[in-house]
Image (cartoon, rainbow, N blue to C red; front, side):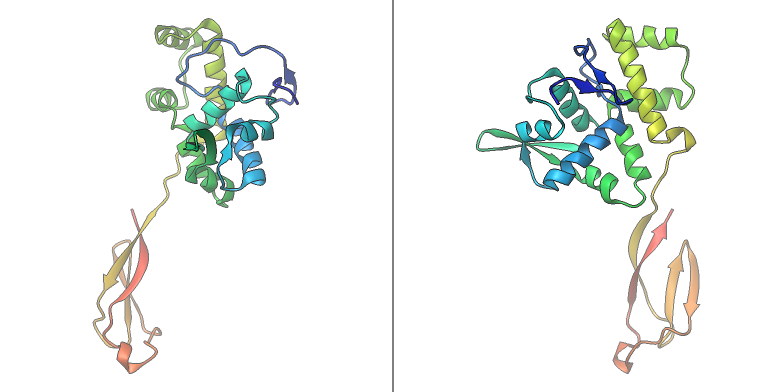
Length: 223
């Protein structure tokens, strides 16, 4: 495939990239994750020259408009890291990308990536899932330096990203775990803290007398 881009509907888009603000990703998060997955299937977590990366995505050169837009978008979503070695530009998938690709429950990581672009975050915090009219959005974006075509491109990418991340269904917040030390009040019985409550597990005797009175550690969820 040459630098002609494939749209999300699978059709080949032969148009040249149109004017847009440089401060937002030029492709939706779903498309960006697809590209991250292709890169992972080829290079795993290793850094690769930018020419290799863009070739994996089907672009003839890393300097074509679509290739530069794709690289910039993955960086804005936090999926790609820029490195240099011996003067050559290398790209590597980020930990956030790994979380999305390998985690069996990636929704929180996907939502984090969706709101990493500053304008995405600002739009979501301002309007949530209920955007104002197109005329109002157009007025706001043009004031920020968007072209007419850039307005439509941004809104398409933003809507597709919010839908893909299922932000309108609620933001997922992962419960954090902390390691706590709970002293034993009687030999051979472990005290476990769970959300502020105390449970006594009478059947968890230490394996030997030497372990009696030890402080047991375990990770417990916190709100």
